Image (cartoon, rainbow, N blue to C red; front, side, top):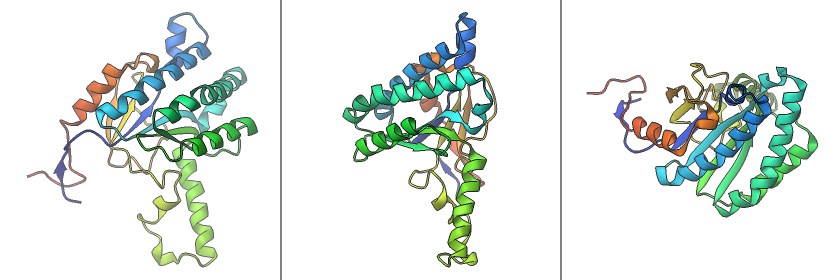
Length: 240
């Protein structure tokens, strides 16, 4: 692919929202207190997107590995997701936000699955901001599920082996209707991607920042978006 400089803001920003537990611990509060604070921060960042030129926002809410946390924390997070969706649904709809969920829903409780389906249906015609929430999501799990569906289509004669390539597989991913992320942000000082959007982020720009997610304000987001505009995206080429 030809090299080209960045022009304009990132169209799609993906965020690994990390640091809720540490934020709470620093304040002598239980981890779930931090998760509640982090959930409130989501609204501010979603509202900032149109002014910053960000059309797509994907947030990592719960990974396939997060089931390893204590039963109390996992149950609390599931309750938080249900309450967040029920509380924010109307506001998201009225603000023109289209909501999608990615990840394997099978392990989630039926009430949460129903709320997710309802919110996707309610906001299906919105297009001001596209908010994608990853719940019970893992990049390797996503690729494995996509490969299984692709293999089934090959076995059923819907696809020939010769048609399987790097252009075909993305059509089977959870994110098949989304553009690849331009910018991936991880908060809390950790410098790893933790199994998030592995295929899609192959050529994304990355920002690893020390700010804990509950402290991730609109101003911090704005600064990162502005800094993205100063980068050069080579895609394996050389700028000349």
